[in-house]
Length: 438
Image (cartoon, rainbow, N blue to C red; front, side, top):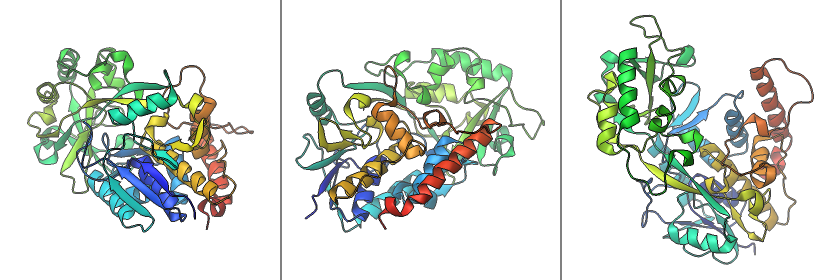
């Protein structure tokens, strides 16, 4: 009989991995510590809970994450199927109803006949085939066990943060307007303009607001892709105006002119009753969040449904520990998936779980590995994480820089990126039947 695989963690990576194994006939024991034990970032009992933004980022093929999503769609990714089914308007991005999405993933896995869900914290690596997808918020006991397994200096960490959520009916729409940047797609974002005087007052208070105590945190230990808004503000008075508060392409319909700065709100659920503050990851104390963010005119009476929080994320020194299949080189029966491998982002975590599930199933069935090529986004990410990094290894989002260039000239960056995507998707289509094991 084929050996059963234990998947530790039912986040995005663990859920995707368990699904790919199960649909290929492999028996899976899915271990998830919720609801018996939670982390500072989790609030529901569902699998694949989105702790930070509800956006899976751009859906355009001129963007590397758009390519990664399309590869996963074409290969029957559970996460992408559930995301598309619970999609809510967000311009050119794929945003989801976070609770509807997580609930759907949970239901799909719980009813699959090859998946057995076992609740409770895992503190030891079990015998047999194991995929550790416990996430960057791995419990202290399991993290300590992994440290013993790897030896000193093989795990690192960075700090991540989440943005606040507000209720739609508390947003002052007389001081805001719906629009998407440069009128791309439908006008799905609430835009909260600030005058120069309002912006400068907001910026001053933000740079001096009291922060919540987070053990070991300093401004240098933050991941650039999830930088707290107050850390960004301290880099300079206009930094926010060239970042999350950029007004370009968002003219105020009341004046016909672009404001001095704009705070954007994105829908967080299908009903449109909850919105999140885009780019406002923060670790300010909760009373300070209310005080400072209420200086934004449209949010002067905002009802905060969830305040921003910060947490420390753990990740592995993967280039020295893992192979291209995310397996531990020293013990290939143990594989890893998700953000703890050093992939950064929801879709990237899903892609790592997908690859581990596919390649583990093929190995257990006596089939040759797929060896996703570097020309695909799935393959490029795995090859970078397992050895493509130069110098100190840092978490990495998918990007076209880790995909081999074209061997012919294409004029214009967007056109070149679109051509890289076309090449990758041709490879996926050519090998689709083999990859999906149909």
